[in-house]
Length: 109
Image (cartoon, rainbow, N blue to C red; front, side, top):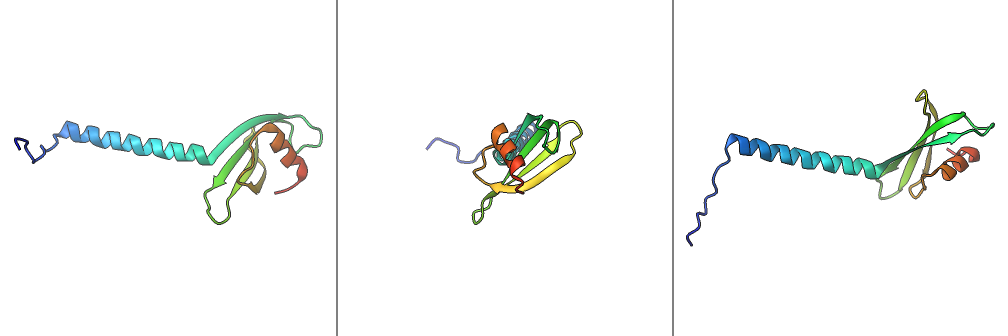
């Protein structure tokens, strides 16, 4: 009682602020989802038998699949951004320099 049950309509400035805030929330959600599914590191590889020498960027992209969870590991020459190697790995693959170098030497993928 005593309260007005009818809400006031939004003016133009309040509506634009509401739309902007909602857009920013959606943008942050998309960025967070991308950060969870994509990881990247750069490592120095100077082994003589490697596929490239110098800096290598390793990108790990997780596939959100309930039936067959997996990830795609891609290696790029950091200087030229040229793809060097790509393969499927377990979703639990740990992205660090040692595991990436082991994966490069194993010949899998």
